[in-house]
Length: 236
Image (cartoon, rainbow, N blue to C red; front, side, top):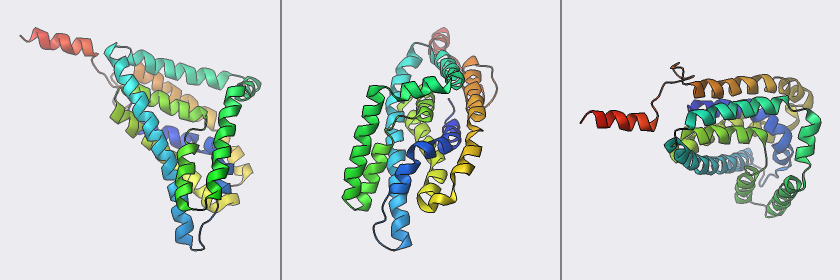
């Protein structure tokens, strides 16, 4: 998967992130009265999220590099696209049941409890730690990003992919933390209606990429590792 799509996934999913992480961003305290200090705290919080996403990208990219050796990287990309499309088609009531599962609720509860303790420490460093933990919150678009990192087939590229994903979420999350109610619920609701369409487009990009059609940037042509090895052996 081309790394630039990581930024697109993050940008598309950022308004969805506001629904999940927005209350946390709005609840962040301000340590100090200067605007610079307040802005620095919000930047540290968001950098914490980006760092967590980068580490996740490295781990899944490393796993993806093992998948490449088996020659199923393209199949993985197609499968990721199909899963996204299926997720879009799942009725909302079923999604709500999934989010209500005990293990899901427990993870969210533990993380939010940690947020409360860190906020009590009253330092910008604690805001950075909150950002680190925030990156671990269960999120559908984070899973889409992970699928992209997995299909890169490299720990370094996977890390860069998820770093771009995090940077894609940065504008709206930073604006939410600083401007608060300026980005109101009605505006988010209107834009959220576009998210399924944009997610479907991303799913098609995953599928097209896996089809190996030779279209630059969208479905680039590449030789599987075994074919490359064979071509080298034929030269001798």
